[in-house]
Length: 456
Ligand code: GUN
Ligand code: FE
Image (cartoon, rainbow, N blue to C red; front, side, top):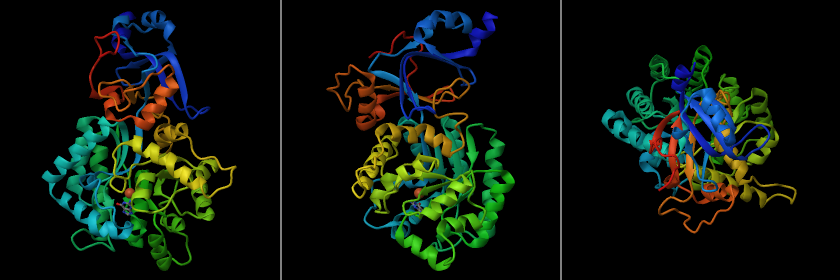
């Protein structure tokens, strides 16, 4: 009946949709109309010319439809940051003078230790989550710190601001300064407590994730216990792998008979729900082990350049059909924006091409776009829920406008949407992201509901 169905539609947007599909890394679909219900789910996607019929069938008012301007506005899926350290936002843009292990000692551990203070955490975590949403990151996989209380604060801020997130309390019980380390039992106990807290929130957007910092920070005992915790709760696992050569040689000294990847595997930390950041220096044998376990890669090119870790050959991972997503790795990566990760992803692949034969094809911006959206959703095991526009999926979306006042590309004279999309990906920033939706809820930007067209 019309009256109840009228209530069931929350947003209808008509215009160009840009997304990845099984068939194409980037599909640009002009003159479409998409409807979202009050549960935040996409209920129809059709030709814009069918509006009248759809309005009748789904019971919405044509006056409430947001109509996008052709070639200058489009809808794309929300960005998925598969690897970010929320506390490290406080020192983004500084501290790139030393490589990974010194960087951890000199900048990272002292910064993360400050989150022992709950008020400090409250302020910093609000800022980082707000910044991410403004930049179109609708889903983020966070490393927090070792602190239970501050991690609770992060979860509460995420819930309040409406982001979709995976949240992990960092676990580390060795090779760390005395002011930022935990005992093995405390680490496991607090990991368990935060899992219980998150599950108790009953927020469908927030998922706990088992988070051993990396092999060098964790005893074998801790890794084993975290492997069991992951299994018992059936949870995803995130960590760092093969980021930096010095790190790899230290792991090799301790585990001379195993590859770095096999060390995680032996501790039951490598499975179909595992995603590992970096993987710059993985051997073919290690890559095959990841493939066998159906584990995924969180590619963090910005960070890999900044702290000179290496360059991951993502073309190779994709050829092998390994799941890959993109991460900012703040603050190894200086920018919280996934647009920067997209650009650096293409540049990293260009850098790889310098050492390859002519047959090698570097990643395109369309492929980087895929990694930042659908690819990331696959890494997190969320591709049945988000990542692109399909009926039944949650509406996690960005409304992009390439011609905002003071646009970062103000001589834009578009006559085709492809140029608009490419310009946005290469030159755009948060000014061009006019609306951000997570599960159908507007979390950042203006509500254009009463306007028939989005105009300034
Ligand atoms: N390896 C262990 N911890 C970290 C971290 O915080 N950042 C990066 N980039 N690598 C790590
Ligand atoms: Fe990291």
